[in-house]
Structures are given as C-alpha cells and as structure tokens.
Length: 248
Image (cartoon, rainbow, N blue to C red):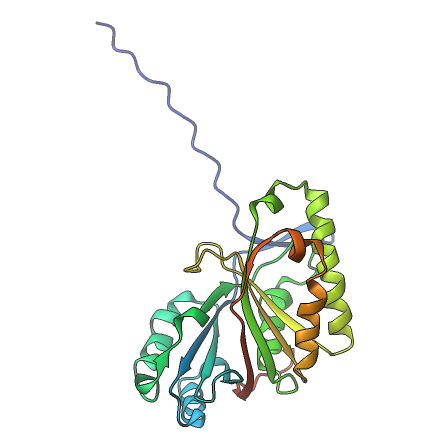
C-alpha cells in the first residue's frame, strides 16, 4: 500500500498584539508594553488612614478612596506594568493588616489594561504616563469607576462607522478635559473581567458634579443609547491618599 504523506500545513502568522501609534518620520510605531490597573473595594473599614499607610509602605502606585455610598467603605487602586505584581506584592499586602479585617465588595472589583487606538503620537505617554498622572493627581481627588460591555452589533459596523461612534464620545471627553472638568483612564478588560465586560473607565476631577455630568452627556450618544449591553456598577469616591509622582 502506497504510503501517502499528508501535506504539511503552513505555520500561521504570529498574531500582532502590540500597541500601535501614528507613524513617526514615516516609520511604524509599536510597543508591546502596557499598564495593568486594578480597583478593589472593601467595607467594614474603621480607619482609612491605615489603608493609606499600607499602600505607602508597600510602594504601590495608585490611590486610596473613601466610598461616598458607604461610610465604612474604601477602595484601593493599584497600577503596574508587570501583571505579576498583582499576585505577589499586591496580593501579600491585601492578606495582611489592615485588609485582613476588611470585607471585600467583589461586585466593585475592576481590572484592565491600557491600550492604544492606533493614531497616538506618543505611546509611552498614552499607555503609561497619562493614566498614572490622571489616577494620582492631587488636584483631581474625586473618582467614578465603572465597567461596560458593548453589544455585538458594534463589532459588525464598518471601520468608518466605528470611528464615527467613537469620535462622538471622544469629542465630549475632550470638551470636559480641556476645561479641567473631567479626565479619564480607559482600560480594556477583554477576558480579564469576571462579568465579561469589555472596558473599565475611571473618571477623575477636582469636583464630583462634572463627573456625573459627563456620564449624563454620554447617555445621548449612539454608543451609549444603542450599542451598550450594560454599564456599571459604579464606584464613587474621593481620594484620601495618592502616590506622589513626578510630572512627565
């Protein structure tokens, strides 16, 4: 019987999962690095200053919030380029005092990664510097954090239609940001969120009302009114401690 060899399939091309920005001097701009960010909420906190002291002691880049909805509620925000941080230093801190006496609020847990859209002129700024500055700026202590999931219909839109939808949102965000009313941290969380959300958004500002107003304004957009599957739950708080970082 003739021994027939099956034709060998060509090796698939390696997927490109790098972050891309606009070309510099005609050369493509790419970076395979990103910032990971987690928000964890707790209740039964008697002294939030102890939480801040633990964050300071462990050298965490982030913030501590007091929960506006819970007089005993706090939340901690941690940022790191290395995801191993969250299962080592971060994890060890959360198993020790004062966290060992706190009660987690898992429905407010959020985790995501910074990402680029493809036209950013400075990837280091977009992926690292800006989100860290935004989350630790002492002039912007108020914060609203929430996850969201898009409907599948968004992915069926053409690239041009998607750009138009995102531009509508972006224009509102830039208007609030340029007047120092609200600033955001946008994170992708595909496959990282227990509830299968797509994104995590953090809004920061010097006052609380503009953060509510930007969410209200966004409700009128096509993305929010037609193309979102779910939005929230919302964590609302004010920072009592933030990492001191150099402007850059």
